[in-house]
Amino acid sequence: MKVYHGSDTQIEQIDLNKCKFGKDFGRGFYVTKLQDQAITMAERVSRWSKKIPVVSEFEFDEFALIDDELKKLHFDGYNEEWLEFVVLNRKNKSKKQVHDYDIVEGPVADDKIATEIDDYINGIISKEQFLNNLVYNPSHQICFCTVKSLQVLELPKSNIDSIVFHADDKVLQTLMGEYNINELEAADRYYTSNTYTNLADESTDFYKKSWQEIYELLKQELK
Image (cartoon, rainbow, N blue to C red; front, side):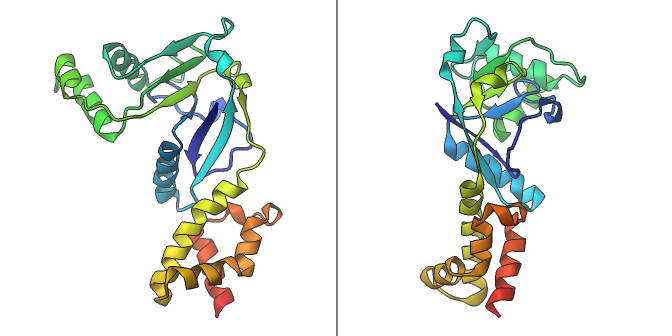
């Protein structure tokens, strides 16, 4: 099964020590089977970092979900058990995992749901009120919590195509606005430029630049 991770960084290796505690399912490497969800996450992260959104694609061996060697937890949807587990992890302020699962799969606590979870934790609303107020939004995440679990996740060979794809839209929109040209003319200037050629060439390391840096290089070339 193909799964996706949205961020602003090209994933060359996974280091669980760099993953943060206090997430829905605890510390771990998170992916989703929903590509649009990963794209949204990548764009959200990049707005803060001013870097290019990156969606990394992985192959996940689904046999892991029935492998007795891995301890797994699965939530079919938003329910009381999911709420209690998310609260347990979000309240964890230590650097020690509060569960011993290798893989946890279930829905995501998006911004609205996360706010209501905070209200529940702070005693503003009851568990019953939270569950009654919950509006289901299609979402999905898998958290790989242990080094052992990462063995069933195949790293991508390269993310360069994904990086270039997400830079293109930002650059083209800005080019159209600043030069008052249509999309066809903007695409012609961009895709025939040396800047784009360098961006698409992984050996140049242009893919590590933010889309704003790419745009400034393009402007210099177009002078």
